[in-house]
Structure formats: structure tokens, C-alpha cells
Amino acid sequence: MRLLHTSDWHVGRTFHGADLLADQDTVLSHLAEVVERLSVDVVLVAGDVYDRAVPSAEAVRVATAALRGLREAGAQLVITPGNHDSAARLGAFADFAEAGGLHLRTTIDSIDRPVLLEDEHGPVALYGIPYLEPDPARIALGVPEARGHTGVLTEAMRRVKADLVARGSGVRSVVLAHAFVTGGVGSESERTIAVGGVEQVPGSVFDDVDYVALGHLHGPQRLADHLRYSGSPLAYSFSEAARKSVWIVDLDGHGLAEVDRVELPVPRRLATVRGRLDDLLEDPAHDDLRECYLSATLTDPVRPVDGMRRLRARFPHAVHLDWEPEGGAGGELRYSEAIKGRTDLEIAENFLADCRGAGPGERERRLLVAALESAGRANAGLGEAVR
Image (cartoon, rainbow, N blue to C red; front, side, top):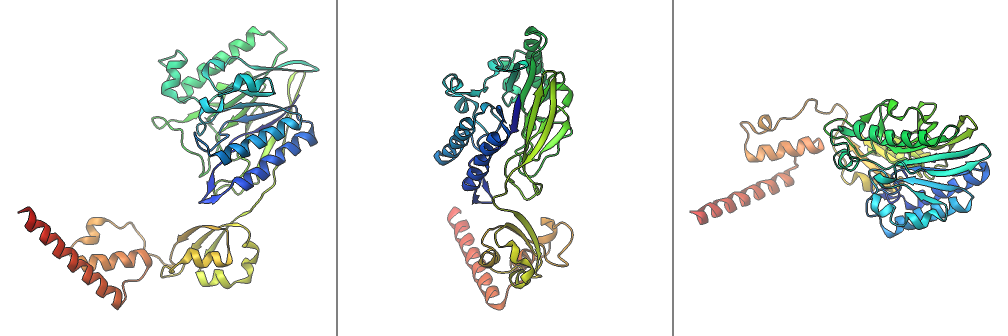
């Protein structure tokens, strides 16, 4: 049996305000081509199909089109929800969808009810563990003494293993789970699932199964031969420079036989650039960045006016802008030190200097004086009215 492991689609997510639906549609449609080209039997989606619990109509359309394409390419689908999904909404029509080859495992009571599929070597049991919020999950699982993610996932896997043992020898096993497993490396785009400061789960929780398809972390990672993150199909932060991919997992008659990585297309590259604004706008060396999602760090000694607008005149897909002036002020500015012994006008002037690297001009200074005098009169009038 050949499996395709993917996760963390986050359909409907934006990238620093840029709409990604078209990019998501492109990459998810490509998965169907991979299924057809490599004769994939089952697609595993390990959580975070959507970016929000209540996705937009357009996000639902893109996800539905992707699932339809995968099914039409010949694969069965097994999906479990992540911490971004609404498990109830994702699994609303699970019983009906199963008849069409879409297997949704979204509830705690279905953890030990696997999807059973057959190949020439016999049965394969595919278990879906939905994202488990520790406090409600420990009650629903009947283990009120369980603590944190480790406690509830340990109980979930106990149920999986008990069911597997009851089925006898020769049944190969696959588990889908959405969790932060120790040894995994996060990026800037995952939402924390920490509870009481502890979100990581030891990999040993998932021992004794043939393959574990993990979701939650957005970079492709191998924690053990049988324990892997596929990562998200698109980059959702500038920390995700590595090429995105899926895992192709082959099971033979004895269990896990081979795992290969298949890279995905990149609809729009990410790029970072640093320098003075005028240099970035004029240097021909940056011509190849015009079509990239761009993060720019400006080093001008004074914060440029309308920096993003000017940057987008040359780089229309610039989405993030920082200002780190050359030789910028070091150290942390403390409020008590910033105002000590200073007049209101001096405080305002210093605020401007800290924010943009230069104090007010003469015209700006006159406006500040007028504003502070007006505020003083208003405060005096308010005090008189209260008296």
C-alpha cells in the first residue's frame, strides 16, 4: 500500500495580509497529480485543513476542490482535525462521506475505530487522533488524572494499541496525530498549543505502530523512520525557506518498507533583503526579487516616509517591512528614564527621535507646541468642571 502524508494546509490563511487562496489552490491541485503519477492508494491529512474554525466560503471551495481532485485521482482519503480546525464542522457529514472514500476521524470516540483498507498483503488499520485539548480531552477520555498533552495522547495511543492487539497479528498500522513531538523544530507560523508551559510529547508515545503521520509543525521533518512531519504545503512565514514537500510511504507485508520525499511547486518564492531604501529601489542586483514575497529591512538612519508604498512601486509583492537604522540606538528604553526631568515637549520630541531617527522640524515643533497647549487647556477646563 502506498500512502501520501500531508498536513497543515491552513486553507484561507493570509501571508502578512496577502491572500493565498490562489497559491493554495495551485499547490493542493498538484497533489492530485502526484497521486496519479505515483499510484498513491491513500492520502493522509494530519490536521489543520483550514486556518480557522469557521472558514470562509472561498476557503471551503478550495479545500473541497482539492479533496475532490485527490479522490478522482484514485486515492482514499483519511483526515483528522488540528488545533485550527473545528472538529465538529470538519466531521459533520463523516458517515456519508465515508461511502465515497473520504474518511473523517474527528471525534474522541472514533480514536480506536480505524479505517480498514486491504492490499495484497492483507489489512491496514489507519487510526486518526484528532487534536486533543488536554483539559476537556482528559475528561472525555475518562482519565481525569492525565496531565497535559502527554497524558491525553498516551491514553489515546493506549486505545489504539489495544484495538490493534485485538485484531491479531498481520495487521499493519498507521496513526495520524496533530501534536508537537519532542525533537521537532517549529517555525514562526505555528500557533502555540502550550498548556501550562508544556506542549511537547515524547516520541515514545507513538511506539509500536508502523507509521505515524504527524501534523502541526510546518517544516518537513524525520524524527524516526516511522515518525515524521510532512510540514505545510506552502510557506506561512519567512522562517520557512526550505522547499515544501510530502512524504510517500510504502508499506509491504511486514510493515514500513520505504519513505520518499516529493517536493511541491512554489507558486511564489520568498526573499529577504536589507539596505537603504534608495539603494533597494535602484540596485539592478535586486531585479530578480520583483515577483517574490519580500521582507525588507531598511537601514536608513532616518525612517523613510511611506517606505512600504515606495518599496511596492518596484516590488509589488513586498509584504513585510522593518526599520533597523545603521548604528541605531542600543539598549532598552525605560519609560521612567525617558520622562525623568523632561517637559512634555521634550518627551514628545524624544519620542519622534526614537521612532524615526530624527527629531521634529521647526514646523512640526510648532504643531507639537500648539497641540500640548490645547491639551493643557482642555485638562484645565475638565478639572474646573469637576470641582
